[in-house]
Length: 338
Image (cartoon, rainbow, N blue to C red; front, side, top):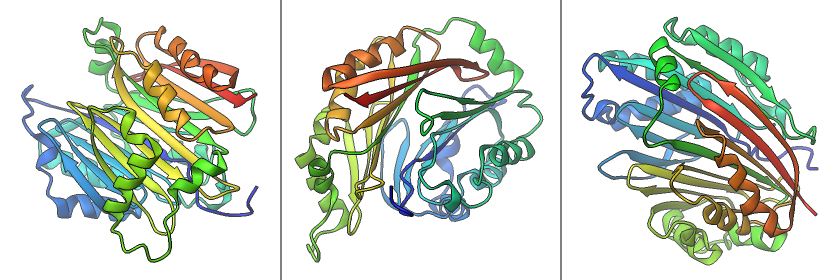
C-alpha cells in the first residue's frame, strides 16, 4: 500500500428539487456557467469538458463528474475535494428559481487515504453533522448508516433525507422503476491500467487522448448507444460521462500502482439487462476487488450483479441490505479475485 497518493474513491451527492409549478421547465439548467463554476470552486474542482442533450447537461470535472437536470443535481468528486460545500450555494440558487429541495442522498466507499481528507470529510460522523446543519428542516425523514462487508477495508456510507411528499411517493408503486448502480474497483490489472497513462509530450489534448483511451480500452463498447464525453489527464488518469437519452453513465480511473482505482456508475431501468453492461465495465479493468451498490425499489435487481461479475473469475464475499428514506433499498455487495 502506498504511504500516500491520489484518492480515487469518490464522494457522491444527489439533490432533488420540486417547485410550486409541476412544470419546472428547464429548472436548474438555466443556471449560468459562471454560477456553476463558483459552486465547483467551493468544492475545489473545475470543468474540463461538457456535453448536453434535451434532457440534461453533463460535465467532466478535474475531479470526476457533474450532471444537471431540471430538478436534480448529481455531483461526484474524488481526491481531496470538499463535495458537501456545494450544498449551501446550490440551495441558494434553487431559492432564486423557486425550487425547493425535496430529497438528498450522499454516498461513498472507504477512502484509501482517509487522513488526507479535509473538513468536512475527515470522518463520516463529521459529514453527517455538516449535512444535518446545512439541509433545511423540511427534509424531516433522515437516516445515516455504514453498510459493512466481510472485508474491513470496504464498507458503504449512506446518508439519505427527504420530505414527507417524497416518503409518500416512495410508498406508492412506480411505473418506470429506475435504479442507480455504483461500482468501485481496486487493484486494477497492471497491464490494463497502463492504458490510462499518456506518453510524455504526446502533443494531444485531453479530449483527443481521452477519445483514444475510450476506444483502445473498450469503454466505448460498454453502451454503444451513449454519446461519450471523455478526458485523459496528464500524466495519467481518465474520466468519461456517457449520455443516452435521459440517462447517464460515468467512469473514472486512477491507474497508479499501489492505489489503483476505477469506478463505473449508471442509471438503468428494471426492464433493461444490466448484466452485460456490468460485465463489460469490470472486464475493462480486471480488478482484485469489486464493490457494487444498487439503489432501487426492486429487490430483484441486485441478484443480477453476481451473474455479471462471477463469470469474470470473481468470488462473492458478502451482501448487506438496508432501507433509506428517498433512496428505497440499498444493496451493497463485495467480490474478490479467486
